Image (cartoon, rainbow, N blue to C red):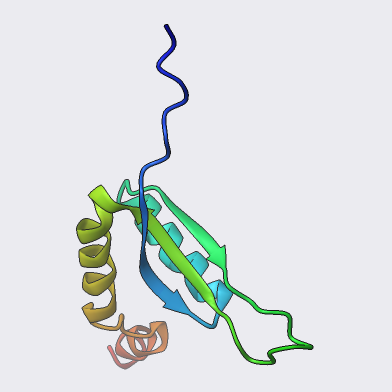
Length: 93
C-alpha cells in the first residue's frame, strides 16, 4: 500500500518587507547559510487596495529560529568601511 505524497513542511514567515529586492537579498543570505527559503508576494490588486501588500520570506518551521538568527546577525553586523577611506590612507603614506 502506498503511503501517499509527502506533505510539504510547514512554512513560517521570518522576514517581511515592502521591497522585493530586499527580500531577495535576505533569501540569498539564508541560502548561503544552507537554509532553504521561499519568497511570497503578498501584493493586493493596486487598483483595489493601493499600497497594500508586501513580500515575505518563508522557511520550514524547523529552520525558522536559525533563519531569524542569521538575519539578526546580518542586521547587527558593522558597516564595512568604504573603499575611498582605504585609498586616502594609501595616498597619505
